[in-house]
Length: 265
Image (cartoon, rainbow, N blue to C red; front, side, top):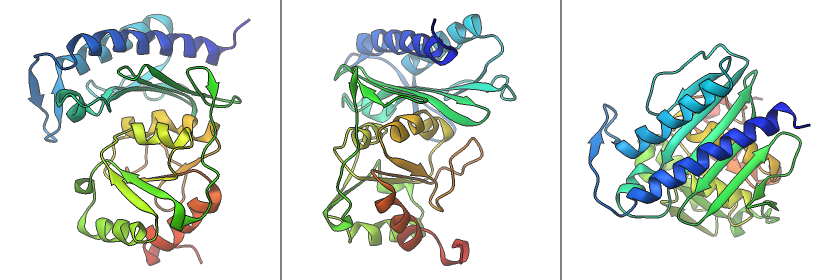
């Protein structure tokens, strides 16, 4: 008999399958783009995917809460909360760049227990679930074994996500790695889980941008926290460090990113 998380995974996969069907019908075709109040783009595709996801979740699990990118939060006081980003990387999607994903996560009493991230163009389904190793298309994942910062790679979506002070700290970190790169959106977290890169450091994220990848990172052996090394939650401020190992993670947080006034003595 399946446990409740396996049942949740079945529904998350159904959502990801439908999201793939919808997004690929429009990808690199004509469609309209609107600009939200926060100056980020949104499409009818985002809205169609989230609407489908919400209806399916509410029909199967009426007691669950839902936090989504495009609609109002629902029953956020529930023990189990679904977190949905229908298209993470909308700018990439509307530009014809295949770096967008659908992200689905579940929190139980505030703790991430399920991650499903789907890249429809590359036909990749990344899954993390409590008490199991993370997987890509059924194959177990493991993060990079590199523990030398000077031989590691550092990634972020864009330099524009940082304030002036944050960017200075990020670039100081960048001086100490082998190379740094922008532009992979949430897909960077998948690549970290797969062992292809060592560090993702970002700021100004919404909770739908990072909560759905937490279990994926953890289940592959990685570490993901805020810039001060604290666990991420619905109350987090959008500053995220994901690392392939604790050996890399703690020095990055303490030495390079945390302001002196916030460091524990």
